[in-house]
Amino acid sequence: MPTLHPRQALFDAAEAAAAALPVCDHYAGVEARMKKSLELQAEMGPVFDVTLDNEDGAPVGGEVEHAQLIAELLAGPLNRHGRVGVRLLPVSHPRFDDVASIVLRSPRAPAYLMLPKPQGRADVQRAAQHIDALGGAAIPLHALVETHGALHEVFAIAAHPRIESLSFGLMDFVSAHRGAIPLSAMGAAGQFDHPLVVRAKLEIAAACHAQAKVPSHCVVTEFKDTEALQAAAEMASRLLGYTRMWSIHPAQIRPIVDAFAPTTAEVDLAIEIITAAQAADWAPIRHRDTLHDRASYRYFWQVIERAHRTSFQGGPHLPAELRQAWFP
Image (cartoon, rainbow, N blue to C red; front, side, top):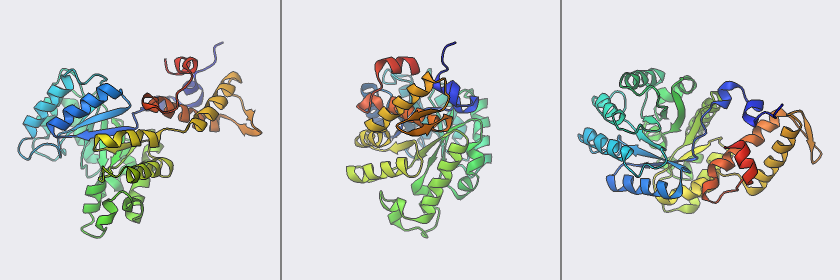
């Protein structure tokens, strides 16, 4: 009997079906930057998603016209990999349905729809019902946790069946505290120091992992400070449990991918353990005088999956025969 694939052997059906999204979510709202982002994705490959922004990217009063432009870009030749999403307006906005219907009428559907500023699970449910009624029932939904209400109900939001990923909206979250959190907490370093901000990040990551959803870390606005971005991305990935992060400038994409990629040594160890476990039909094994079983196998398989998702841009590569066997 053929040996089970790692996903079949190590995870239940819900975990096995969980989305494996690119580690970088790149935002663009101005027409020239949207086109440049799509050109870059077409060149680099689907190592990062592009989110076309119809909320902050649209001029006030011009949301419908901006949605029409986004629909054209979705259907255009630059959308080569099908990994382009759209940030909609808040569900409370009077043009929410107008914008959503235009985007959903595009000949090519978005990879996901981002819901900004929900006040709680009820807003997510309301947006999902509107989107489903407009013909978008098959499109995954992402949501921004950037209000007190959304953070309070973050576990319930993560459990919503239409949600694929949750992102932390740092700037709006800090502003919602009416000056009680200092401006420094919006910066690359300060956002990891303030207890209220760190608490929010941890709640979001924990809620996502509890429901097999993808936690996406917030922006670093100092887009020319590569060292600050790298440090923030490593903190998000290594200490706070995030598996995805926002980019707001093309120069941020590569450092984010590098920070979220496992090291060559981590990948080599994971391959040794998973191949030995698979050969043992997933029974416990001894490796370098350490016992491993399915609990640790799950961890090492996830290292391999991260390597696969980040290998397009020079990260650790899996041997060709294993890549073919595991990711055909």
